[in-house]
Length: 148
Image 1 (cartoon, one colour):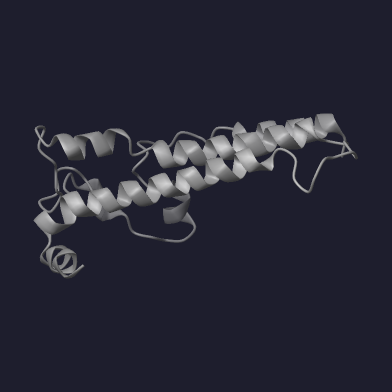
Image 2: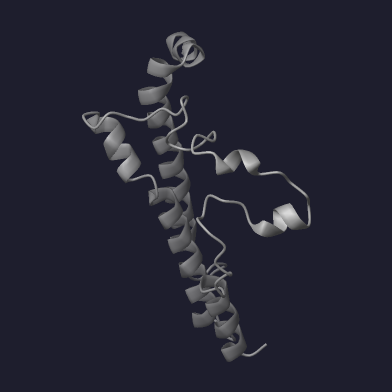
C-alpha cells in the first residue's frame, strides 16, 4: 500500500457511507425481520420497555444537579477514545515509510494516555452514576454500597 491508499482507508473508517434511512434510530433494521424472522411488534406500542413512557423507566428530576451534570457529560469517554483513534491514524500517516526512529515508540505515548483517560473517565462516570442512582433506587444497590 502507498500513502494515498492508507489515507483513503483511514478516511473511510472515520467517514463511512451512510446507511439507507429506514425510520427512527430506535427501531430495528428491517433485515432483522425479513431475514432472521424476529418479531418486533412490541416496539410498535408507545410503552415498549426502554421508551421514556414505559411505567418502569426511571427519569431523573430536573433539580438533581449531580445527576444532570453526569448525564450532560456522558459522551466524554467515547469522545476521548475516538480522539485516541484519530491520533493513531494521524501517526500512521505521519510516520508512513519512515525507517528511522528514536526509541521503540514514536507518537504512541499520547495515544496510550488518551485511551487511558477515556477508560478512567468511563469508570469514574459509571461509578458516580451507581453511587447517585443505585443506592437510592434499588435495594440491592443500597445493600452493596452499605457493605463496602
